[in-house]
Each structure stands twice: as C-alpha cells, then as structure tokens.
Length: 639
Image (cartoon, rainbow, N blue to C red; front, side, top):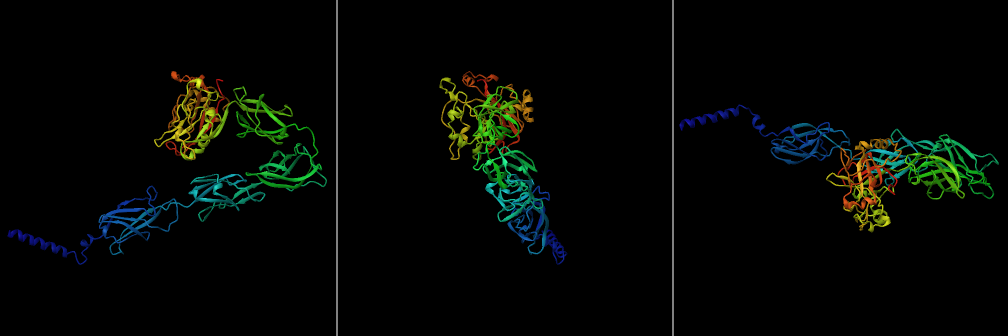
C-alpha cells in the first residue's frame, strides 16, 4: 500500500509539472474550447457550375466541434439567422443579399465567428444562386412585318407580361395570341402608322417595370404607300377599265374599293398594283360619279385613301358573264380536297348559280358577290387518283363558262387537328368527328342530338337490326383521348361502352354521357409506320404527295392504342401514322358470332398523321395531355 501511494504521488506531481511547462497562454486548454468546422460537412455543398444550388433563405448545415460557442455567422458580411446550434451542429439561413438575378452562380464568403464575436474561425467560399424571377425577354422574331404579323417574344416568366407596345399602339394581355412562361405570341395591332417602311420600338410591361424588347434592332413595319394619283380635268374611267397605281409595299394590299364597290385586283406587286372596275357597278345618276378610292391591307383590315374623289362613268356595258382571276383551296394553294371550300376570285361572279367539278355539281357557300364566290369540292367525283379536272361556273339560267382545271384529290384531308384528354382544360377540344372534319367540345356534344348524328357512339351497341333506325345505320366514329397517372395515354372510340366517356365533363361539371342503347360504330387502329405493307402509303403521307387512298390492305385490330416511347403495331408515338377504320353496320350485327373484320367489312378508313412534336409535354400519363395530327379520310365504302 505504501508503495502504491508513493507512485500516485509521483505521477500527480509529474502531471502538474507538465501543465506548468505549457507557459502562461495555456494553448492546449484553450484549444478544447475553440469552435471548429469541417468544411466537407457543409450541406448543401454547392459548386460553381450550379449542379448543386443554394438560394436566399436556404438553410445551410455544418458539422464540427464546440459549435455551441459560435457567436454569429455572416454571408458576404450580412448577418445570417442561426436556426440550430449544438456542440457538433450549426445551421443557419442564407440572408438576403443585394445581388442581381442571373443564371450563373455568385461566389460569396461564409464567415463563422468565435465566442468573442470578432475572431473568424471559418472563412469559406460558397456558391449562391439568385434565380431570375422577373419577366425577362431575350429575343423577338420576326424583325419585320405588317399589321397582323404575329411576333414571338421569347424569354422567361413571360406570364407576368401585362401589355405589349408597338410604338404608341398597345396590345393588352387579353389580346395576346398565346402566352406561356417562355413565349408570347402577339400580332402587330391596327393603328396609325407612317406609310411605307418605318421602324418601331417594341416594349413590354410587367408590374411597374418596362422591358425594351427591340433594343437597337427596331421592328421594321411595312405598310402600303401610294404615289399621288389623280385624273386629268374632264377625264374619267369607264366600267371594265384597268388602272395601275404605283407606290411601295403594294403587294400587301388585299383589296381596293371605289366608294362601296369592290374593285378586282388583277395583279399586286411591291411597286405596282393593277385593279379593274367591274361591269357590275350599278349605274349612277348622273352616270359620271365621284367616290373615294381606298385600299385595304393588314389584319384586321386597315384602310388607306388612294384618292379622295375618283371619277367613273357608270354607264352599263356588256353582259354580266363571270370571269375568273383565281381559284384558291381552303388550305391555300391549288390542292382541292373533298369537302373543302374553294374561293373563286373574278368579275361578275354575283350571277353564278353553281359550279361543276368534273361534271359533278358543287354546293355554293353563301351568296356570290361581284368579285368572289365559294364552293365545296363535291365527294361525288368518281375517279380514285388525284387528277386535273374541269371546273365550270353556271350562270344566267345554267349557262356554262369554263373556269379551267383544278387538281382534285378523291379523299378528305384535315390539318392541325388537336384533341385532348379528359382534363377540364381540354373541354373545348374533347372529340374529333372525322365525318365532319372538326373537333367538338364537351358542351357541344351534350347539346347534340347524338342519337340522330352519332348513332350509339354514346351508349351500348345494339346488334339487332330490327331495333336500328335509318339514322343509326351508319354511326359516325368519334375519336378521343384518355390519360391517367399510371402512364397510359390512350386513343379511344366509344364503341360498345360509355365508360371512358364518363370521364369527360361539361363546363357546368356534368358528365357528357347521354342515355340510350342504339348502335355505334366499331373502330379499329393499327400503327401504319410499323407495317412494311404500308411503307409506300407512309412515305407518301410524310412527303405530302398522297394521291389516292389505296384501300384497306392491312386490317387494323387494336381497339384502343396507347402511347409508347417505342411504338408497335398496337401503340403510337410522335411522328407516327396510325391506320384507322370503322366497320359497316353488317359487321356490327354479326358480332354475336365473334367474327373478325376483313377488308370488306370497313365502311370508311383513314390515317392519323401525328405531328413530330404533336404530343404535349404532359404525355404520356397526364389527363391534360393533347395530340396534334393531320387526318386523311376516305369516301364511304360498301354503299
């Protein structure tokens, strides 16, 4: 025992001697009470590239020792709020800093102070993001145009833009053609502009701020400018005269008037425009009359005065035989598709009683005027391959006048069709009716006499022919989309079931399913892009050279194809072409024997050509999804 006591006494004496040797600063003792931060524990650990980001208000955490002794933290010299503090943990929020909004990160310095409030124990560079939340416009296009030209503004947070100014003319947000966070489309508005070419500054407002859109590259506005036009003393024009006017940007002129009468625009080029005074102008009293000569241009139509008083001898001359200037297809150009409207420009057209296309009567659209008439391309044409056929106008008791030829395609073609899944934002584009070539809303569907128009496309299929009415004999197909969070964007038709339709609602919140148990079309689909037998058809559609509908050479079988990243014959995707068809009434009546359709069973068929970017970003798997496509549709078969 004595030996142990002696040993402990010597050990204690040695320890005290060692402590005394440390000197008056006692650094080892102080080190045990100094905060220390391990920089590798910072979270989030941001970097200059921005792959990991922190923002104003982000809570930053750090690990170390004696962190309960930290007195305060600054970020770029601004005090930060400490949210948690223990021996081993320190958490604080990034304070508000006076930094401009930008995409790139900022380097800031984090300083952590010792208990004395002055000694910095941690000085570390940190990367901070101040995101752009203000409206920002980075570009616009095109840089020139006229009234009605659609200008696209690109940038970010553009949904905050409240109005756009073209010079002194303003377009309110309600007048924008389209708005998204990244893009605004707005047409150059009507207004008082200088004639000829002028430069306009485009600006945009958001909140209380104004954005200079154009900067140094001002928007060049083109408007028609007529050189001074006058008649010599005692001079006047007579009916049938052609007059040429000179100026600048005259190719923008869409029409000219003498008083209330439309003149016939014969040619319109940048430097000259030639018009004709139609012989259909009514006689005045006295016959030599004066009226203002004006030009119309832009969208909406603007009026420019060419001459305040232009003299015309209105003495009637010659018979009112229609004369043709041009025929234009509904989609523009010279391709006439079945069911589409053709606009005819000419002279004395008010006397037209009808048209014949390849000898088949064509229905007039509205009442012809002196300078314009319209007709529908008839589906009664008998040829099956697109070809040049004669077009004749009937007037004055069915007298015929030859209007030349036109290229007529023996099928229907509809462009830029968009339908949406059952989300409430898609109510206006819910259902595509191919036989009509248009999309109808849920409200319109609800108001339709669907039994007479759509057969039982809204109810159960009736297979007993004795219960079918004449109107239900060939029920029209209807196509629509369904989309669910599970990832299935599906192309549907209401064959045999109303269950999918029950997902669609009207603006008043009621479902659109009508009661009834009358017959419905039975629709089938197949991905033509995946079928080698349809390669020629697919190539023709993609090239825009489709000349005929070759018949049902591959029988479609999928009842409701789904969207797929790698499409198959029973699925679809962007840029794909889908063969669609629906069966005849005879086949519908034979379903009790589980008969499979053959090529002869189909009443009509066609092709859905989905645009390359025609599936909305929400798809697949969202009820807000849409698809946009062009549609080719055959004439009725098996009649």
